[in-house]
Image 1 (cartoon, helix red, strand yellow):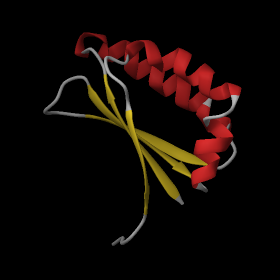
Image 2 (cartoon, one colour; image 1 turned 90 degrees about the vertical axis):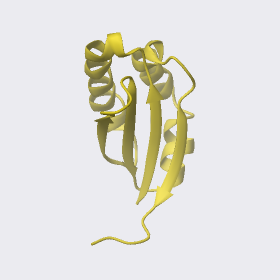
Image 3 (tube, one colour; image 1 turned 135 degrees about the vertical axis):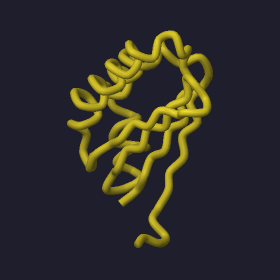
Image 4 (cartoon, helix red, strand yellow; image 1 turned 45 degrees about the horizontal axis):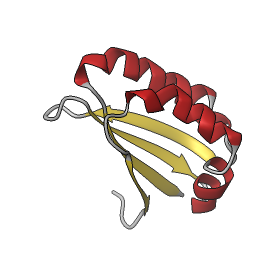
Length: 99
């Protein structure tokens, strides 16, 4: 399993609207992508307007090719992209250790 980790920055004054949009976008768009296994969204306590989106994928290619190169990606960005105040930083991680 691969973890997509997206560091998202928004205007804190739009937090309520963004939280509704990201939940809607993840559950109605990303959730239907091949290889999607689940997601979580965390809001920073210390940095208002900072969110971490973690999406669980079967493979790296399910995200980078299957989703990112599909029309669904444009649909996803249309839902959440207007809230971004700077480019989102995305990294992919793999599990090394777990308790």
